[in-house]
Length: 305
Image (tube, rainbow, N blue to C red):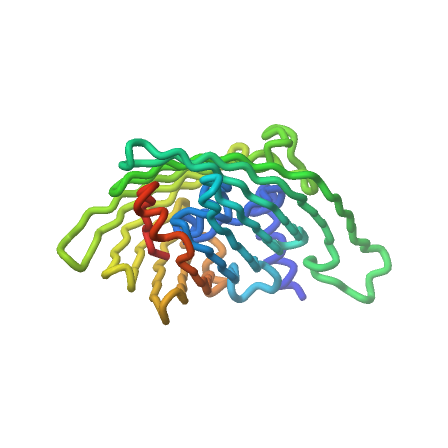
């Protein structure tokens, strides 16, 4: 019991400020951007569906995130429609976020396009100490707090694409103030990212990327060195501040079916008590409007994980 209490106290000291941050940070977020940016809904003209799982800090009970993301493109109105569901469990805090996304695409001389997106939904936050803190059945004094709140939730995002360059950003929880967040009411979060495609030869592309995430006073940076083989196999080497490294693999299993896996490990005071974090994503693409999109809007399809 003493070791468990000591570990819990360490987690409290280090990570209580993050519990109000309801947006989980995925190692593969630049390639699963529909989770954080509504402007990506329907991109590429396909019908896309993905299921993801992130197991955070293997060795500790509790921290995990499940994701379902789906979207499609409606060519008559040049728009994308999508849906996101995120179930996040971190310590005593649980978040369920269900959101509908809409994106409108604006082409520029068939060489680039800009997409503007809006996400609308609900966010339910629950704080339950009894699900995390060490419990002692012989202690008649110790009590646990449990509370929950359901809030309307809105996101806004944009993304600009050319054949070899991509830049985008989003703001989540627009209805909230960045300075008034608490355990049951998250503040605004800001994401920004960019990446380039640099052909190496007729088979390989080098795709470096950068992501920035801000939640109140916390800033997180992510550097990615990606390698892609004929749109079928990808390998991403990743560094995230502070002191987290990771690697991600992706492969086309069969036609539109894709499988991706990543592992990251943080070199900090808690690294001796966990075995890193794992992510697994399974996605499927149906190329309904690919011909139309390529000929009319010139969508740049990254096809990477």
